[in-house]
Image (cartoon, rainbow, N blue to C red; front, side, top):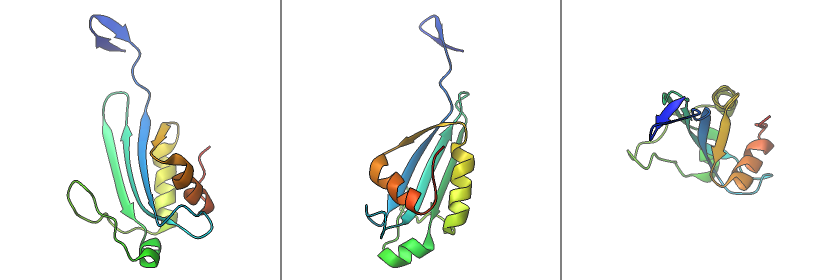
Length: 114
């Protein structure tokens, strides 16, 4: 429980804020090029994850960068990215911007949410 203006309210549930950068919105042709995720626990603790997928980047010829630092995220093969995302999103609410197209491309690559 957390305190708010003298009242006790339930803690926020654990969630994962997820950004998938894709090479486009076509699930047959396009791929996930980069991933950024932040897991937020009810205690407020945070875990961050960033990765670029070299095969998708080579196809698009664009290198996604962190808007905050201007640095490219570390490269990681898609199977490793998907395995890490499964761990980060397990038993958590997942919040995704532009979910319909981003998750469609991720699903085509074999990453499905339960």
